[in-house]
Image 1 (cartoon, rainbow, N blue to C red):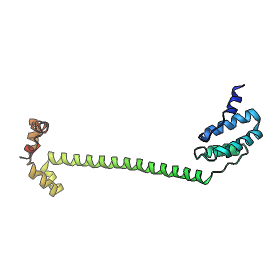
Image 2 (image 1 turned 90 degrees about the vertical axis):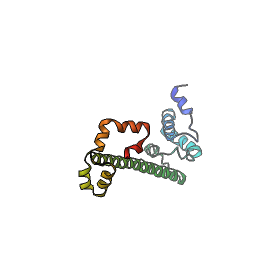
Image 3 (image 1 turned 180 degrees about the horizontal axis):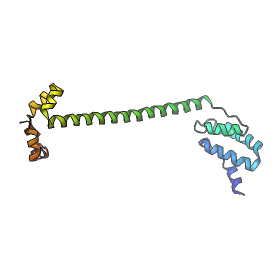
Image 4 (image 1 turned 180 degrees about the vertical axis):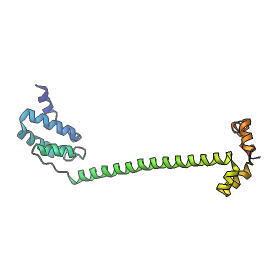
Length: 169
């Protein structure tokens, strides 16, 4: 038995995909001709394929239409396809939300670090430009104290030891 004839006997099941149904039809056409292949394909499709929402696809529908067979989506297949489309849309929305969240959090973090850097480097100027925030910063860390701490390495020692409260004294 030729390999192509073996493919004709490899019938799709109720669990077969649309690609398997299309492949079987192509094998049937080479084995028995287009008209007989269409007839056999429709019989098996009605018995097993039409009940499987995964068996129907727009590609299969277009291919079968080009072969002279019109297969229609059942209501269940339309619902399953639409639910899949809705799920895909929701997944895209979630992915977009995740990206927007990372961008916003990253932007806010960078802005906060830049603000903190400016306050530490020049509390007097920060006080003038930021008003209350600058005032609070210079109250906690008087001008020059931060520079001395950073240069002496005292900050990193305190952070490593977990004695951060000594920074505020």
